[in-house]
Structures are given as structure tokens and as C-alpha cells.
Amino acid sequence: MTGLSSDTKHFVFITFGFHPPWNEGSINIIREIIEELLTIGNKVYIISIKRLVPKSHYINNYKGAPIYYLSPPLLFSKLIRYELKLTRFVKFLLDLYYLIRVCIILRCYRITADMVFLSNVSYSLFAPLLKYIFRYKIVPILYKPSLFKFMNLDRFFDAYVCIARKTMELMYKLGIRREKLFSHLPLPLTRMEKNVNKEDARRILKLPVTSTIITYLGSLTEKRLPRDFLQAYNLQENNDTILLIIAPKTISSYSYLSRNRDLWKKNSKIIVRVQNLTEEEKSLVLYATDFIIFPYVSGEIAVVEPPYTLLEAISKGCIPIVTRSCLMDEIILNKINGVIVENPVEVMHSIKTISSDDVRVMKDYLKRFAENRFLGTPLIDVIIYVISN
Image (cartoon, rainbow, N blue to C red; front, side, top):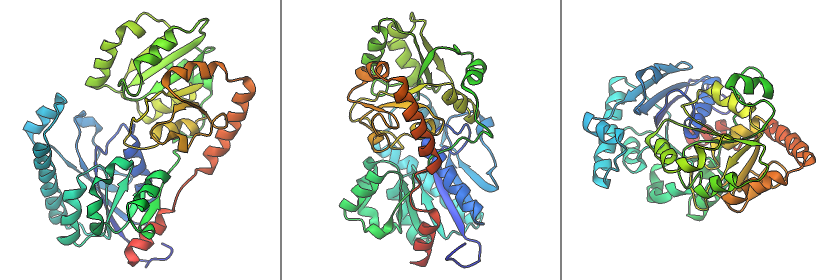
């Protein structure tokens, strides 16, 4: 490792839901960081809070890094299964339970760490204990500005890995020293060995080969796929496009589809599939897509901003149509590598105004954009800074 001693460094990741299928942005970003650490010869341990998924989804290790899973108590499992909202006190008890379990794992397996990365866990509980009891160097991975409620905990953190430039800028405005802030925005290129032809991808997925396919990929809520957008799609005259909606198997997905059944069920040009995609399946969907849409309402937030699926779509050559939310306008340049609209209703109109020359220009820019991988600070610089201070 350049700039560090030749001794192997040890890193611990404490996170939530680290298991296949790898279809969440926050988990995929952690995977990229872990792979980078393993590539330069380090030892990595992963402690992950379990989700309610089949046992077959859980794995013992990731590329040689051992994984220790934490299961919620039976009572909490029943509450979470029915997506009941937990009170603040109950959440505190659950976080305290996980923290105790993490400490037991660290002690029992005699895990030492030069640095601990925290992601999607209770920073206010985990950071102080790991800092003062175990004397670890703590680095949170920050995805969105709404996580800044714990800024009074700055004294416990040795550095911050920010997933968006605006996140980094806001941290600085809140008084965090610039030398503690590092950006890391990976552009996920396909993990498949070779690109798949659009027609072949559509045949595999049993989609129309010759139609223009517009894809929405993600959670189904009124803030992410507004009813207004579906109404605007249905009102289009001489509509020769196919709207492909793919959502994960969750109660909210089925509830949304039930509420809006009148808008999608009777329209043969709207294809709805509720399934948890694997990496390969998600790649095929993106290769089969002409336009990928993010018709989010203003003010909507995501765990990863900009959404990881947007970055994946760009790397596959999909033309994104986005609204000004979730920091997507930080990535998208209007009519250069995508289209920005002011509200969800304008999505279909914008697609109709895109000429073949526009498509060619955007496709060319997307290819160069993906090859450059707009990465932030190399992770090695974060490690050198934290360990040397």
C-alpha cells in the first residue's frame, strides 16, 4: 500500500442488509469500497444486520471477507414483517441490542481494526462506544444530507466518505473541517463479461423487440412514480412506446399497484413486473431499455443521492429522463447526457421532442461519461489520512 507500512491493515464494515441480490445502491457502494480494500491487500470483516429475506440469500463471506449476520429479536421481526412503524424508544432499544451484539462479535472473534466504516446504522450509539471502548478510528459513509442530524458527534469521527458533492459541500458549511471530507462516487460499470445486444436482451426478457421501451425501476410510491405521470402516459395519442415498470416484492409495491389499478391494468402498453432482480437480470433490463425515467416529485429523497440505478443506467447507455430531485441534476446535463424535466407530467412530452440527432449525441456522451467513471477521492487517500492522524 502506497504511503502506508507493508503490514496488512484490518477494516470492519458495520452495515445493514449486506446480502444478494445486490440491488440496493447503498450496499453496492459498500461492495465497491470493500473490493478496493481487498485489491490492495487488506483484511476486511463485515458485520451486517439481517433483513427479512430467504435464508438462501445469506452468504458466509464476500470475496474472502467473512460476514457476521445479526438477527433481530423475534418480537421485532414480527413488527418489521408487517411494516409497522416503530416508536423512537423501540428503535433505540433495537439499535442498543444490535450494538451489544456487535461488541460480542468483536470480542469473541478477537477482531482488531485500523478503521471501522459505519453505514445505515445508528451513528449516535455506535460511534461513541467503538471510539472510546475499542479505540477504533470511525469513518461514516454518508449518502444524503438528511443524515446530518448527528453532526454533534463530529468528535467521534476521524473522516467522512461522502457519496455526492453537494453532501460534501453541506458538511463543510456545517463546520466540518475540509481535510476530514472525502468524496467517493463510483460509477458502476456492468459486472457482466460483455455487453448484451438490445434485441437479444429483449428476447431473453420476453419484451417487444421493435418498440421504444421506457423503464421505471425501483420502489413504487406516489412520490417516485406519481399517479399524474401514469395519467399523462395514458392520455398520449398515437403512443407507440412501452412502459416497463419493475418493482421489488414489498408490501408497498403491491399496495401502490392496487391503488392505481385503474391506470395500468387495462393498458396493454404498460408492463408491470414485481420481482427482486439479480445483478444479471438488472443489467439485461437496462440493456433492453431506451429511456429510463425518474419522475420523482420535488423534495423526494433517496438513500443514495443521486440514485445508484441512475449511475448504472448511464453505464449501460440508457438515456435518463429525470426531475430536479435526489441530486440527479448534479449528474445530468440537459440534452447532453440525459433530459431534465420540471415535473413528472412532462416526462412523456420530453421523450417525444427528442430527435434522432439528440439520441446520437447523448449516447456518445454517455459512453465517454461511463468510461471516465467520475470517481472522487481514491480510497487509499482516505486510509492514509485516517491512519496517519
